[in-house]
Image: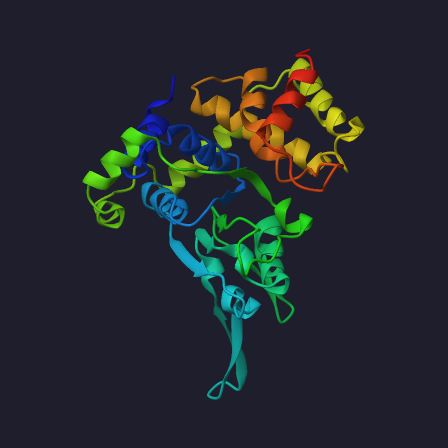
Length: 305
């Protein structure tokens, strides 16, 4: 049972992003957990539209940065410009100082430019010319990336991937949703009429509520068992880190809030685990990221305590 505000968010977003209610709930749980979201899929499946929809519904200041091979870190963070009148350098903030940043096709930029977001995503601040500048609250990065086999992509390093709380795929719509999409209005036209359902202040309040949801000792035991399974299994190169464990609890709390509960169940952990672990693990057999079957098998191997 969705809480009323969350229900309105999901219902309104579902009018724009057709047939993807589950993915919308995952995206919202990521934001409620104060995390950053990575959306990986082929072009044309609605990744950019999803980010723009969330920004509109949450009333957030929104900036889109199109990542390309010639994009520089200063194009994201900002640059200091010499002011002749004052004979000083003045910092001109880049798009990263918005509340929601869409890093579109992030893996088309060079690793140097990708890493420019690391401090912003982890510390929610930017350092320029020795000066530390705070980013607004709330602050989110939603990044989209194309499959790695496509021409002109640079793989995201593990340190960058680890800053994304969840990674989701939208996939193709089902037949009914696609037919409605083909017969309906252009999604950009619909977005122009969308109004905020939750204000940034209300979003911060929801984040605080999510962070205080009850997590029992037995549920912590279960989460630790999952983390240990990834570290002990010969199927993976390395296991999940303590930071991933913290993210797992935060995301499970957010999912429980979306479901309208004041406590977290093992089912909440199981719901978010594949989307938290998939981009952080590598298979020992070939070094690729585990697929849904690999993660389902891992979940089934760990008993609920």
